[in-house]
Image (tube, rainbow, N blue to C red):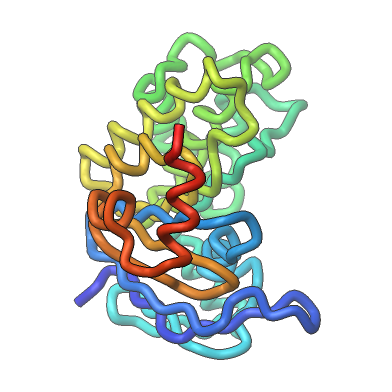
Length: 245
């Protein structure tokens, strides 16, 4: 049974259909990369999964359990099982790193403060920021802020981590420090869905690549197969442009 099962999901922003029957499976411990041109629906898939956009039709199952996104209780439950990291860090500027990481587990999930703070220290050490516990966001580089955002998501102890273009807002020299954290999570068996334009990284870390275009899944398969020998003309055109150099 897949860890995550998405079937025929349709989603709209107003009258504009952004997902047109998307289906995909993600196994436990698998890293799936969503790739494709801007506006193809990649980030929308992640937003639907965490309940930020309610699907019009289709189904989502996590661990075999169907999710009813019309139910506020079920949306809260799914957010206990998934966490998302956006391309913008969205840190609270008036809180230090420690508070940014511990706020949601303590105040929203009502977990024990001492337990959460111990976990936060371990997570910040893990992402290379053990010396920055009491720094404020404006004292950190973009790469450091994004690593705090990843630690904050992990503090929620998700089963599935969603990463939405987490390096796109960074200067090139800061990209690798964030990608190193994701590499470590992949090696440790974290189930992840990541949206990325970093094709060399996708080739290295993803177990499977799903190409999207115009709100649909065009192709899915191992990175070498999808990146080097795509089956559809649209995929060949896309990868021919972005992998040319």
